[in-house]
Image 1: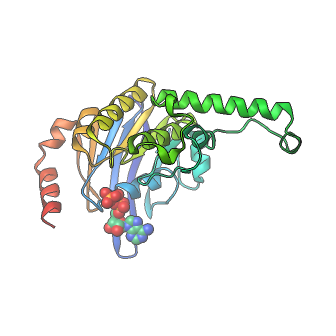
Image 2: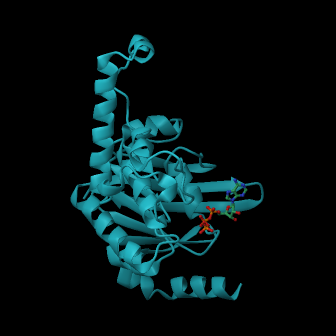
Length: 254
Ligand SMILES: Nc1ncnc2c1ncn2[C@@H]1O[C@H](COP(=O)(O)OP(=O)(O)OP(=O)(O)O)[C@@H](O)[C@H]1O
């Protein structure tokens, strides 16, 4: 399989802290790749760099063979990279559908349409709503489309976030700790959802602390510790790697 994403010798320095140091790996098109590591190991920093929120101090990130550096986050979204964030970013008083609709690219509604509320604007709004509900259906919460986001369960809010990320039609989806705060049933549903995205041809990079989820859904896992890649490979090999066990046990002792 060809690499949709390539991280090549990436480093990120924050003052004296090396959040990432010489990190390289490739993500094949159509795969689900987990990025794991103890707290502070550099996972979110890496997601920020891939999504254009941050820039590396050294190294390059290639998406579909083109460097992502120098492109704004919205330009990367247009190219096909979407992400969710560790902390939920929904507008609580808007409905699930309205939250997703915010991320949908607007077909050209002109100023006159908006000021005069011409029938064309109503049609555009109706189409946006239908597309938002279809995206919520895709993550299996279409039935909650009219609920204010603030009234939804934690797991459902995470799903709305994924629906919103899917609104741009990404080829690469970065999920930053999607299972955080979820109960067992919600985690199982999330696993099914990620497997479904892969079936649809979406490449997924999953940053996650929940080992059952990571081991169950990923084709390959990259392990970071203190900003360095310490292991890579299939879930079973990574789980039994002494360096990985040591990194996690060390983190527990800390
Ligand atoms: N903007 C910043 N300024 C200074 N230091 C930062 C900044 N962002 C991250 N760091 C530091 O870089 C290191 C890696 O942080 P990062 O958030 O990427 O880790 P993480 O693996 O995502 O952690 P967690 O699992 O707790 O979310 C940490 O030491 C962190 O304190």
